[in-house]
Amino acid sequence: MKVEVLEEKSIRRNLYRVLRKTGVTKESICLNASFIEDLHFDKIDWSIFTYYLERIFDISVKDEELNKFGNVNDTLHYLRGELLYLCN
Image 1 (cartoon, rainbow, N blue to C red):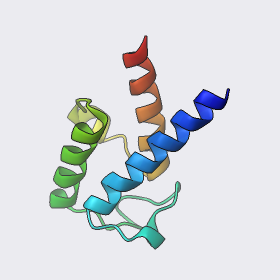
Image 2 (image 1 turned 60 degrees about the vertical axis):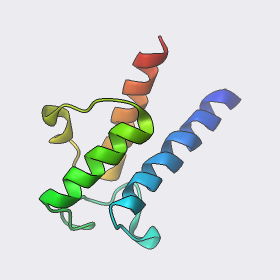
Image 3 (image 1 turned 135 degrees about the vertical axis):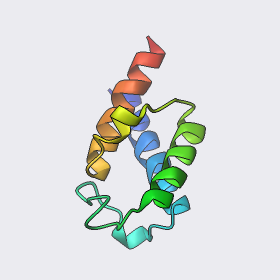
Image 4 (image 1 turned 30 degrees about the vertical axis):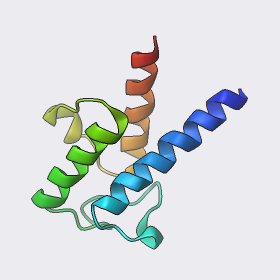
């Protein structure tokens, strides 16, 4: 259980790192923040976000999956599933 909590913190910390590289302020980052309405993502932001997400987490995100990311929490759920899949 303690390992899971540690991994969760690590995933969240790295996701926030990705968001910061996209230009999102620390104060704007919360789990229910919408990429479009709250964080004001445009096509360039999505490209930068995807680039760093794939590099930092060493994954490949398909466009179909990326389109499902409505808020930060959606991305966190995706990463949990993706990283769990890679570990098995």
